[in-house]
Image (cartoon, rainbow, N blue to C red; front, side, top):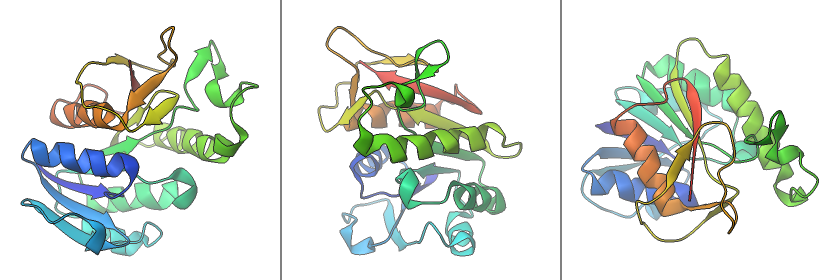
Length: 202
């Protein structure tokens, strides 16, 4: 596929880029600093601004899918969705957050007493982004939430998938960036969560 990846040099984005390349997809890496994108076959780096809706629309046009891997507090969800819609790209996959996942019926992780204050703004913005997507009538979107701990690790290919509930074990709730990337690219290649959120964890 010909994939546009917004935020290709971030923690999640760089692993998603590697996974896309590993599987032979062509990638347009849209970033603020194109010189930070590793030079490799099948990857074209383009300078883009997530707040420039018109410019972003032009960069996205002609791709089979768009993957967004940018911080929610460092972007405008409405501009991103509008750009995808205007570009007429068939699919939009979003690197989501864990904060909007439920830990009990009707209780979101972000609303629990022990949720770290330092992550609250990002988690709240991520939940708002998901709410916006759920109202979307035109774009075929998928929002993939990681587990509570979203960290560098190994590419094992061994993980569980869920829907709206936080996945956890006795050891806690976690997923590596590398395994998250596998789950996201799996969804790209074989769509199973059209206009839905799902989650991945150990």
